[in-house]
Image 1 (cartoon, rainbow, N blue to C red):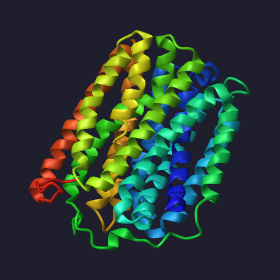
Image 2 (cartoon, rainbow, N blue to C red; image 1 turned 30 degrees about the vertical axis):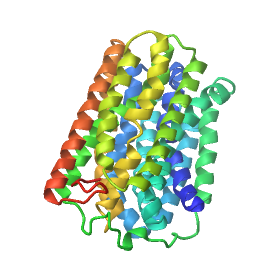
Image 3 (cartoon, one colour; image 1 turned 120 degrees about the horizontal axis):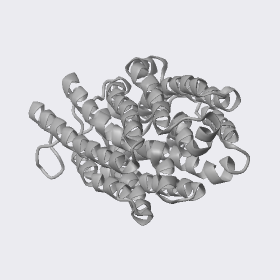
Length: 393
């Protein structure tokens, strides 16, 4: 199981490094290329725009060519783009283009990793496996935050992208020669539905995922810049970003372990976390640096620890084609990640306080929408949960 998890973890972490490195090193990059907070939001937005327009098609490609080849192509493409940022990223326009292409590479990696895990990990361990896989995304933020004092403030931000490029190559080389053969979803599972969920309900979950990712996406992009404005040093803000990402990783892993033990009601947990987590955005908006430091890990741990459970539920409700199905829900996630930073960046031009409050409202909306989509799924096809009630993952 360890080798299978590593095969998904490293490419996923490499796939998100382009946008999260830009967010972590934003103060230095903005000083070099001269752009404002709204420009930073656009850089994040084009990454996820490239992913959103290609996610459904590349989910189908991953189904056709196989998870291992898709992951390897995605990781090597990301390595090339990261190196290009370091070498030819001398203007804001070039950076926009490169991050857009990086988003396309990430759109291949994400559904391929879902397919890889769905076919490689026994069903009884799939919750933890998705917790590990989704932990790779905040791991990218963690690495980006550490890159600020370790590389960015010593030898320059471009060398951080060179180091990330090497990491992406290692991720591609660490993949096995062929897909592991566990194929857990082909084995009857008393807790899994026997047919795919209706497409309309999958789209409803995608809409909820859009609002959730809009709230979560601005954390990785703007936390360091906002922390500096709140009174932290650039180095301290980078380390806070890493600490907050570590909190998200820990919660994702714990939720994955719990999912394997409880078996169901994962979407209830997702919706609840998003609603409760909105309070952490209020702390980020409050003003005093102490509340900001408290709010950052809480926001990451609550409003950005849901993706593992969310993807686990989608995979279990689409056992025939998990990569294609999560390509649809990932499209919603990517759309939110496009619009969130764009709107947040514009609002942040007038101050980060109002922007963080707005992000908290997105988190509440996401929780309500995902809960409503779950109700639709229950009404369409009641599913037995371990406590005997009717519910859905």
